[in-house]
Length: 225
Length: 261
Image 1 (cartoon, chains in turn red, orange):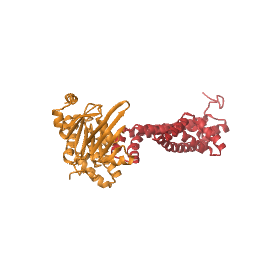
Image 2 (image 1 turned 30 degrees about the horizontal axis):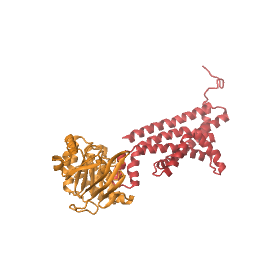
Image 3 (image 1 turned 120 degrees about the vertical axis):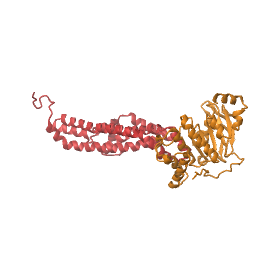
Image 4 (image 1 turned 90 degrees about the vertical axis):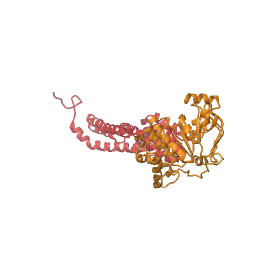
């Protein structure tokens, strides 16, 4: 069985893979950078939302609920375009990468807020009551009693969102951030060979996401003990 | 060395006539159900009072109100002259420190060792030095017969052992009042005896005022000097256990005791 190059348009060209490598590694770096910074923003901002959602005052609870629900129920790509194209009109200018990190961090913070909320709600009421009975101050109740118990439910769920965030990073190609997908697109545009770069990028996502999901599962088992 | 259980706050002489706990016209509703109906009663210092009555009669609510886990709809609750309700948050916090509580489900902090369960509040709330709190915690563990389990996690203990740790934890705050909310109901029969022994010990060797809700009538007879029979949010009869158990005056008390004894 023989294939003539280019005849079927589906032959595999290893040299195209090697040629893609410099761009590929640049893309990996940017994707991981977006993921790390996006996670950081979503973890910390999510905690702020979660505390806002539990605030005793409605003046805090209602606006936080409205904002987080709005962000959670609108598509990430729309938010990305909004931040990238509309904010500059108001005089706020960020690089594409910064905009992408902020958008993905903000979007996912509304999910992590729910993770924190569920983790905190799952701590039995008796723990709060015991803390009250011992007159523990509010900050000790949170730091020493509630959060350490909530963490075992929160950490695995956060891990799952990091994986899902990883799979959303290609959306940043939409505002021309030079992450993996955008790099493969540029490569294809200059060589007219899309098969190899796109396949490599797909495999790269599997190679990052699958071990990560195993790690999350192991973490889950460990924390459940 | 026996554990020193004297309260951290100005102790009131045990023979004092002025009440330590007073409920004045306390009403508590949950939705449309009135759990406590214009309730008035008082407890003198050092007394061991058992609250009995059918479930839903408001006994546990009384303990929860004293621990500020619930808020009354109206009425006044005082402890040693300090108001719990109505009161500013600061005053309530102050009054609450005189009260300790042991729960039906133990409610130990599962993320902390047995020792830290007991030292956390004395260090953070009373401001004890950590080594002082630890020494005291070990005395208390000795008192409840668990001196060798200081480093265990609560999940490694049996229910009865957890409840004894919970008793030690409550005592570590040197409360004037100890509230016991069906503390043996979640235990297997074997563990019950150990917990009751500890409580009997505390009742006879200290002047801590105890308020307990229990279905263990033997325990009630054993340690309490006063039994209050509740029904429909009111005290319908109270007196020394010998009298309540042997010759109850009220028809409702006779019915209830006939059903549980």
